[in-house]
Image 1 (cartoon, rainbow, N blue to C red):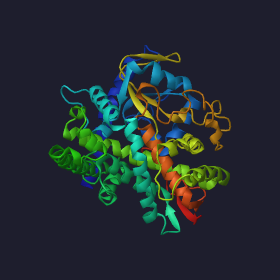
Image 2: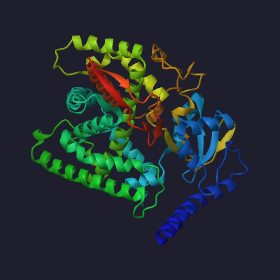
Image 3: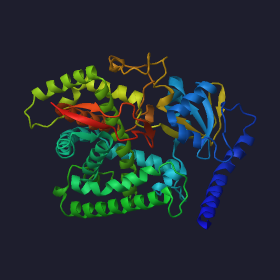
Image 4: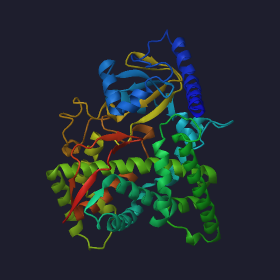
Length: 472
């Protein structure tokens, strides 16, 4: 009973502390025309509604009730405006880019110890990380060299995790390969070494949007321990690799860590910052990459005519190569219809909910004012099933992406503008290579026709999407 009261008191303290800024700001903003909406329940706002209904339903209901341009809500103790539609996407991600900055809830920053410290603002930290990411991590010439490695490791993965079985759960399998590839390409680790991180990532993701109550037994407390374990593991790897590379530069591999240690931009992050950054990079890769793979294969199992067209495209590529010859950049460029299928799968099940911004000076959109200090959410759910942009939006139709594709700023799974996700090409190669290898070997049959979809950072099937494999 004492433990219950302790948890209740801690929860009350957290809720009061995060709600005071919201209540104060509402009183100061009465003179401005704020976006229509609701602040929800006292203290908790609409956070519970968001978590229980899922982002898609939550956003669509409020667009219908308040406005299809912009509405206000309260999530995670913050005044929040959700800017909607193609015009809203263009405004937030392009026009107003200089007046907003990237933002994450404190609970997520605390996962990575990325809290504001004296002399280092949150904006400075994001700028530093993004500059490092663009300068070192995702250079196009390096990514193209990773395609054969992705292909080789995917083939090994299918031999051990697919070939011996009649039924495979697609989501856990896709999480495994995304982790293997991330560890290999980022850290230079072999598949057997990568698996020791799997449990830590799983525990961390389960608490990604939990209340930041750091008490024994809470999801947040367990996640903090696992993230700290990951950081220390990565720091050890970084220090060992640095010693090896400094002693003999020729031993440096093609992985991101080795390239970074030899790069002129290596000074941008300290060893510990780099370790924290790698954890922060791998967690969403592990989640969103596996989600995209899972829902692509789901639709291919449901739609035989789409499957047959993708299979034909893949077999034309396979016939032009020796059986053991690995995929390369030229092969991936030929997978045009396959990429359209992936885009349509991401339209129907976006791999991420969206991204947050913080307003640095009052901004005006659609006749309302979003005050300085408010947070803004951009989400693909405001456009991806809008019949104005996508006729018969529930139908799976890859031809939407032929030619010039959808109207500008209506389909942006990787965001757009100056802050477009620099991992777009990595994700594209990852999904295409996995899709190619699975389809060359198997036809797929879903075993749960209407499996429920849940959300963490992105969507995932409640039972893991079990599939019966039918070898060609």
